Length: 428
Image 1 (cartoon, rainbow, N blue to C red):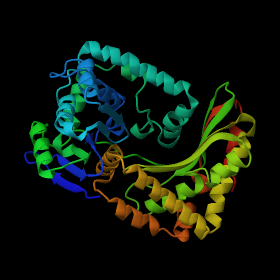
Image 2 (image 1 turned 180 degrees about the horizontal axis):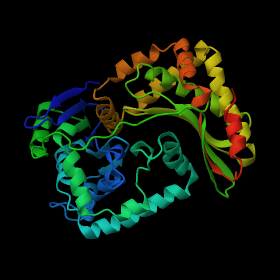
Image 3 (image 1 turned 180 degrees about the vertical axis):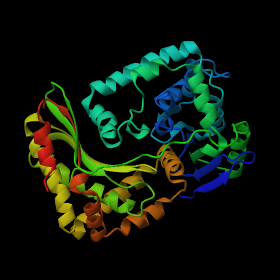
Image 4 (image 1 turned 30 degrees about the vertical axis):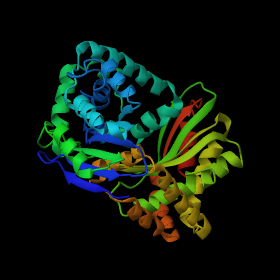
């Protein structure tokens, strides 16, 4: 897969093209470093709210119906996503409509109306989204409890969508200010993957449509995330529900860390698939959970690693002890060669299959550009993964699975059990 990196002719907009002759689709994405870690308490939630508002009408397409109708009539799909450090807008079309995709992308990010009436409508929808996250334990634990436990009241510890109070306080000036300070050529990239019969022609089209992009350096910087932990920490919210939902994990590596690939293989061994250790021990052998998975969340400046599960409320202490036990085993025992190979094959095979889709390719490119500031090919990443040894895994485990670094977030019917949970965490 050939990755072509260029800079726009009349600006510093990064352009990344990936021709995929075997497909008949095209995915175009505009990525900007403008996530919730760039927000303050005053505009908490603005990155996500702004993402929603770009679809509510532009000067050229005054209503959301005008935008949707044009995309639907071509059999296309449009969406966007906001994360801690970036926002991405993407359109997937049959490749013959590449020009229209570029036109729509530039239109929504540069010419949105931010009509006060539309702001009010979307405000109501986002407040319902906030309530849905808080009402749903499977979303509350990873999106609210876990970040708050690790980072407190820093931008990294806040909920992506904001609070009801911050959303209610938003007005048109907040959107204009955030957009004008961050949506600029030096802070953005245009990624396009799929059927590209003529690279130079597509490059010229991008230059034509994005010629008027705002130029300059971003005027808002995200503050560094501060991490201090000297003992195991607990977040417990008591709710009268039938199942307990937990994350038990640790602080880990950021995206520039040299051991990031070893961490990825460790993730696959512990909980990447149905044959992984956590899944087998907790779900298959004991039936203590319906879902259990392991994650590593690597950002540009911080990272975390954890096991998330929905468990039998009466078996929660057993599950916590089982998770800790699996962490300890990785620290003490060498990973068998067959298991190590299986984990690597799983990671590389999954990535290889996903990259058959132009939208998956674009998503990966945007993520790399925004958070790593460089593009690594699939072949290069595969070599890095293949190079991970069993000793690398044990070294990583011994570095991150330390008693004082344990963090446990729980939502469930466990009033008055704080001391019991903390006692389990303090196993030294």
